[in-house]
View 1 (cartoon, rainbow, N blue to C red):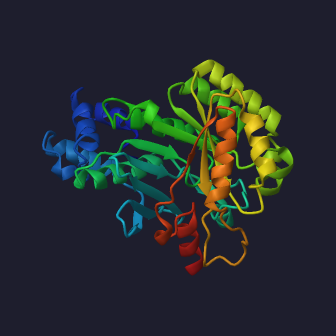
View 2: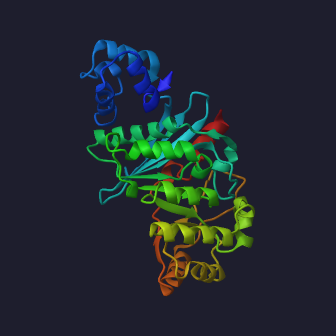
View 3: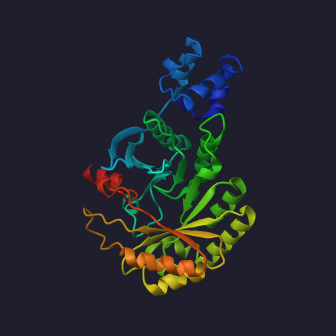
Length: 348
């Protein structure tokens, strides 16, 4: 069977069955605009058309294993199980000023081996299919719709490297942003990458309006190699050159993610190096307090004190680089990337 999000095969099978040309548009509207999950509930198509869908197309391949919402109701973490038994996560963030954001997974596990992230302990299992990414977006959109809220932003940054699954990510963005489908603005979609340089170049061409976030976390190659092995393949000078080309092509600001880990990457020396690295760049830095995992015994990382993070921010202000200190919204529901999946994996 095919996914209902597989437009090419859906159109082909409808044509082969001598369905009318407008049948696809009716199905498309029911799925993406009205969130109809049961083909029998699509009132605009015939029973014969419903049977074609039942016979050839599944609506959702993911099984929801848990849905955990924080005490303040701002965050919901979703754990899904794929048909081949892999666990993936999505997170909905409801901001107080009305903006709702979804972080989606595009891989099961992660091949990047960043030392501060729970996902690497899962190992790399496989890339997700485009429809598995879309299904996460569909579930979150429908859930918020029931709350009379709208999903506003989509971020590809949970489990994990989008540019190592480029074609499926590209196809999922196309479905999310196509006007007759989910109709998200490209400007409200962000791709977060561990500096896969060839992917950055393709991304600039394919999605000039979509935002780019770089998982930086250290201002020098020496430190980056200690916490992010990808640095051996794509050193900092190569990365920054590709980002200069990206901003020249798109005229868009690059977001830099910098996780603050006490006594690892948070010295004032590193603050000065970060300021020099990004001086004169079209950049915005997101400082992320490290999330401690009480149940993890193999990590001795600790979060940086807020005062030190503010010192980093002040040094960036001195060179006119904008920055934000990320507010942690979900400590009570195993917040960090991969935590829930890793917990479930270890328990099973």
